[in-house]
Image 1 (tube, rainbow, N blue to C red):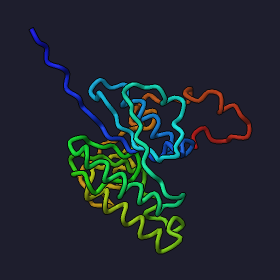
Image 2: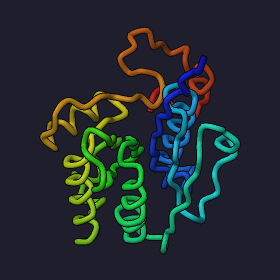
Image 3: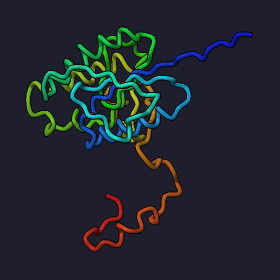
Length: 207
């Protein structure tokens, strides 16, 4: 009697910000990757990282995760653009059946919309002029918005951000993946942060 081998379900994961682990998106990337690695559905996660990236200790030696190092030709947003839309997109063509998760506003032109997720944390850079210091920066932000709307299912990390993105980008329903304690939980009390409220230099409990 022969047994049918289990199916292999692969997920491509955009791990660019593992090279910047102590930023907000860097932490989100680490926790999301850890969470996905614990799921039984995906038997292999192919995590794309810059070639000079040192993977955080917490993400090393996980059997489910395989790191694919892709050339990064500099340290600016133009280099990041080439890393995503040339090298990363071409690699994803070899795994056209596998979905991809982008933990920041990014999408690969090589993936269909139903095969790709882009996490947009908020729209602050897209609406505040302080984040649009040059024409090139404005073009980059316009490109990020266009490629996310055109090639990905957008998700966000709070219902407030999801509502803003839906309204300003004229998109359909946006699922929410919370970074931490769900904001719709009605049982939050001040006792969640009992220590910081005692510090005399902090006048407000939540900030």
